Length: 328
Image (cartoon, rainbow, N blue to C red; front, side, top):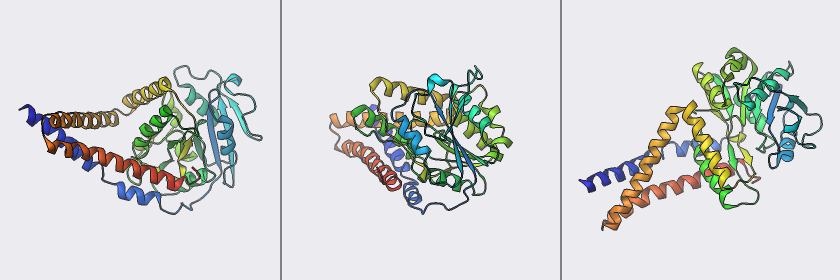
């Protein structure tokens, strides 16, 4: 009976590995499509800042030098103390949100202050993170995707590329790449707050400030509002953002814990699916090792299969990211 249960776990892990391969070919083809050439309406880019992020000066400089015909960049912070001296490029507007709503997260308060300060001629809002470095075509890629029918938001995602690789920073990159690898041409579960564009009319019609009120996660709540309106979240490979900063062991553990806590609260179904897959993979591989120790050569093949599939998918993710981020 014990062996039967162990083989059941191994079988589940193998089946899940096979199912995880679905969509990989279409995702790779999607990354290699020619860049969108849609409209480039006037835009307001808002980046909240909280303290001296590593590479902040360079990240803001990249946002201030985008290849886009008509946009303004607003840097939003809670107070002057959150904005290090000398990091903001010339001709960039700075907005201070103050205390804001005490029941709402600081980042959201900063974003709302930026939205309120946006110029009237901008017809799209674009949200960025201060710890990411965008390419010159980043804004053009996001804005072009909004011209498709039924699109609520266009989004990119981050790819951790520490400029001086170290073990903990690379481990963070691997952990993050699993999520990045799940975004593609089909249905996307969420938009990422570090690279999201939304039409001003959609933002106001869905009353996003009301969705954000009392929340900590700007992107999950925005995603929920868009999906509630039966609109699509479009992932744009050309809007991948390089995160070149570093982290240590404690920061990595705190960061991953925070990501999981936020996901469990705002996207419980997604969190449960991830937990189920994790338990199946770990349980199946543990069972395969036990069976190998007790003389089953077949278990060694069953163990290598999920590991091999994982390595192949990791290589595919890396090739996709490299294709749209050739400068790295």
